[in-house]
Image 1 (cartoon, rainbow, N blue to C red):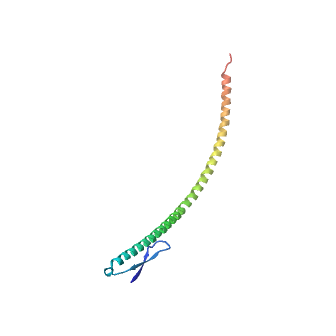
Image 2: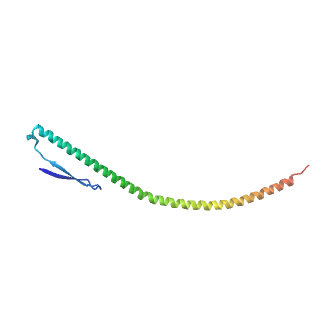
Image 3: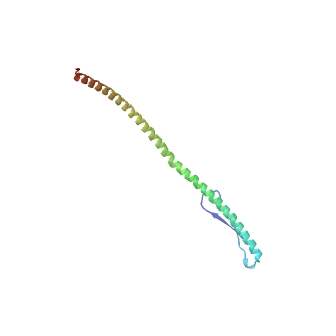
Length: 130
């Protein structure tokens, strides 16, 4: 008698159900050789199931990595766009400030030059040659 079970994990993997064959047997009526054969079959089935389990875990891991990448992209792209627009606004403001400062510094240089010239005039007036 063979029963089929399916393993439904609720994940997003393409292999959501894996058929598993289960055989019911009356071990008490078998000989020692038959029991050894049965244990080899069980070990083989277990190894096959381990391989399927590993494959399913790897697929699930791959799905999780893709989901994480998608979520990070969804979150980071608007932030980066906002950051770029803020940086552009800041750059424009700095340019405007630089133009204002250059204008003011130019005026200050002219004023300083005028003041220095006036100081030289006063020093020359106060200077009495011997």
